[in-house]
Length: 393
Ligand code: GLA
Image 1 (tube, rainbow, N blue to C red):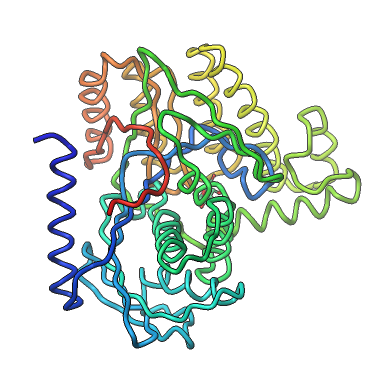
Image 2: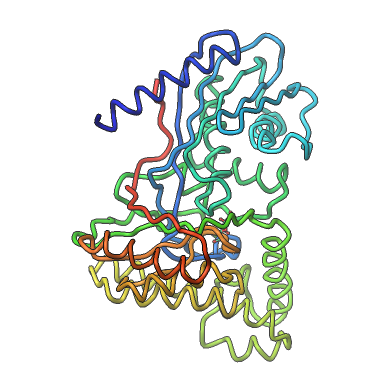
């Protein structure tokens, strides 16, 4: 069976499920992808450049309208249903995943959009949850995309990304940057997005790597973007910025240059804060170098930068941990050209750049070494670089 047939069968199954759950037919179906970030980690909220792309795992949403002024959300993965009144939506811990659906409507209304009609929404996902591939940003973008299309709100994709970030920040409480929501909303087939997060300007970079490709390695340790740990890094960067602003004329840490680091070290007078700043400044620089190497087809140089990025995230930013470090080491022992964690860290996923034809051998070797050390099997998969949100039906 080809993949188009199997996704049509899947959609039929979801339409039947929708009928069982909501007692009516769905009126339309949409989907959003997941994302990996090639390089530029923990850079978005520091105003620098990142290089993500949308990948072939998907969040699918089906909807119908209701007359009760309620948002009713059902997850096919968890088999759980939550409902919220449009006029009284607020964050509730017990609403778990559905906060991401309700949050969209809370923010839309806060932004002045009149939502006059309730909606029933079924969500189905093959994006592994809590794996660092941005299932939460995908869900937020999906619900914004559906609401926008169905209620004819005329919001463009850039604004969808910004509103989705706002929802995550203000409604869900994670102080994340714009990278994930933008990567998913603006994804294009076989392109990476070089996004300047400070200016919100972006350009597409060709991902034609010919005989090489990126593979995704799931550590199979959920990262549950330990809100507190992630927010702690954001706070550290903000503290460092406040101190450095007294001397340098900067709005964000990515406006610093490497040659200024010795002076930063003196001013900060705090080894932890200094390590955080060193990561941010060097990582931002690596994004520019990586992007140039990609344009020039210098694969070995790309690989070297991936490894440097991981080292910096491990030693200076301290967001990797045993599982990510082991999978990156195992990848390099299995002849990857380069490898690094991707996303927020603290567990989750890594990426490796390999020669296409070594894939099976690579997977075998990494699995063997990783399992021998950690007694967990990783999932290692080739993924496609895909378009952003689409209407399926
Ligand atoms: C998470 C956040 C992003 C970004 C990455 C780290 O995925 O949601 O905004 O900060 O971590 O680069």
